[in-house]
Length: 216
Image (cartoon, rainbow, N blue to C red; front, side, top):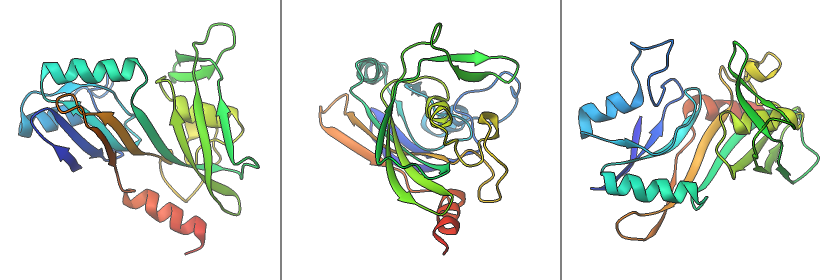
């Protein structure tokens, strides 16, 4: 875990890919990010979440006022988020906008599914960054915040994330988790009003996967 930024109002972290943000029902005694941070930094407020298996940048508030200000930004879609993902297959498009409606927490595996009738509005913008022999590196910008949104939208396009067996990805030795990394986050500072962008370097497993796909 790497601290990317800290002041009196916000705390920005590069989360590892084996750590939940909050305790999960079936792992109540397992360590989780908020508890670890509060042991060192005192009371923090959760503004948003990323999956346990997803690495990358996440922001927390350190005061109730900062929490309210950041929540408003998220609700108004004023926060810019960019994820990098490795996908199975090589898209022919350079950019793609998906608007598949999604329904969350379906079945005993708690999957998110595309549901044209009962799903809620969801939008992800994909941009192709690199092509490999049988895979690709893409940037995904979620315009809404549904559970597993990027993973399901990529799967619905026919390009499931490498290692994402929950969403029908084939077996791979390239990476042992869904290949998704929260690359950057842009917000307006709740106190100064200055626009800030935070970027999280790839963790070792994601960097190694990119290197293998590049043939290095």
